[in-house]
View (cartoon, rainbow, N blue to C red):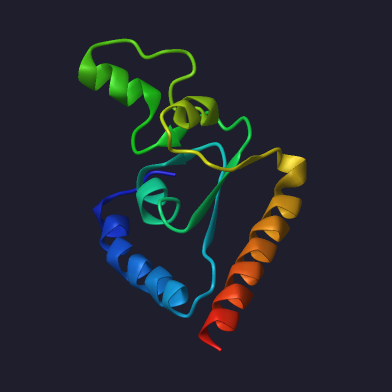
Length: 123
């Protein structure tokens, strides 16, 4: 998907909407697959609990070719993959495509347990 200036103008509205969901105490889960680039990467995928597809291979603001042209240097074979991002400390949760539903369920259960603990502490 090509994103121009007009689509970038909507990013603040998107962040406000996500913030209102977060303020209610509901979890925001971003499922990051291949590709996740540009405005999607900074607008949606950068917020909330991030769940990365296990072998996703094109994640970032700009694509590999653009970065190579800009820097004038070749990138590594695993550049912008889930594994590479995990090595840099950006990935905490991964799931195989067939296990994403299970991983979402785990996240929601963890959130429910945390929420119940907070309610008990307040009582």
